[in-house]
Amino acid sequence: MTPQDLYAAKLTTPDAAVAGIASGMNVAMGMAVAEPPALLGALARRVEAAGIGDLKLWYFHSLEAAGKTVLRRELLDRVTPRCMFLSGIERALIKGDPGRSGYGPIDFVPVAFSASPRVLAEQADLDVCITTVSPMDRHGWFTFGTSNDYTSTAARSARRLIVEVNPAMPRVFGESLLHVSEVDAIVEHHQALPEISTGQPSAEEEAIAAIIAGMIDDRACLQMGIGTLPAAVCSRLEDRRDLGIHTELLTPALVRLIRCGAVTNQAKTTYRGRSVFTFAMGDAPFYDFIDDNPAFHSLPVHLVNDPRHIAKNDHVVSVNGTLQIDLGGACNSEHLLGRQYSGSGGQLDFVRGATASRGGKSIIACQSTASGGTVSRIVPTLDGPVTTPRNDTHIVVTEYGWADLRGKSVHQRADALIALAHPKFRDELANGLR
Image 1: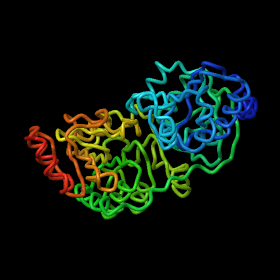
Image 2 (image 1 turned 45 degrees about the horizontal axis):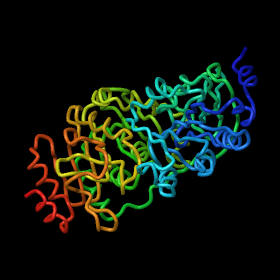
Image 3 (image 1 turned 45 degrees about the vertical axis):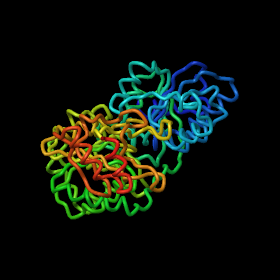
Image 4 (image 1 turned 90 degrees about the vertical axis):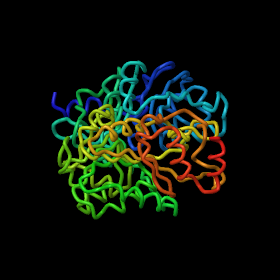
């Protein structure tokens, strides 16, 4: 059969595609922009109409499509979210039902982003994987588009793969290809992709961004997250030369550095000339720019986030945020007010990869206070789990400056971090050491 014949034979409706999903099954869904809205809507209808129970849903980082369908509160007695990274969707569910030691109805799975493909392939026993893909080309190839991450592994580990073809999903180069022969069912659904905006940085974030930008030289290889602070850092790098990109998340702020010529990727050791990423989130012009653009190279997260691969490039600069830093340098980047707030994600992967890179810098950044200035983010003891151990923390930045913790004793670290705290908390922190 030709690829076109295979496509036609597998094309069906969303409701028919999910008709085989039954109670007790394990289902993986594409994350973030790759959530398949039509399939998720059909799955929610099936859960309601067919009386399905104990459906375990595996994923990272949900958005509105899941929040309005399978993650509706009234379905969570039948759908168990095996979530590996919380977004605003899960935080709202936990806030409304904060039981079970701060996890509410979410069956949170602690795991590094780099390890999630292996968890899904070896522990989850996946029955079905559902995700959005870009349209098929004449040779029978889809791509995973914005979300290679764990999805490319889950798609090939599950006993059944159902894809939602969306013409808005960009075709992406790299290890992102999926052949029609690998797919069990196809649905078509044309919908604009979710757009992510970053807003305006605060005065404190502007100060932090200026400090960080001053540490980034020509030929550095960048990893940046999403949000106002990383965007503010990138906006100060447009005069740099021959920057590279090897990042977990590709964002519009990084793409702007490509468009202005600051990023060429010519100084990289791996994938020279190409920007490497594992998932992408942005706006419509951003999705259009990465579509069919060979300057981008998508890889599974177990490769992108492997510290050994990160460190092959020289002068890697990794910028990540945190919620709390203790006086020894350990970071809690995922737990807030007694509840799980996000997840470990890829922070430690890039902390270790950047510090192992020749000339590399791992930067952990945060404003010195939270809750309107009433709470210090630099604390004697963390309130939650350790996301980045003190042994790994390299450079810490707040609006009051920066400190390199590498090689410093615990006493030297405490002194350096107290100097980065808000002045109104410094005496209290120092007194706690006596």
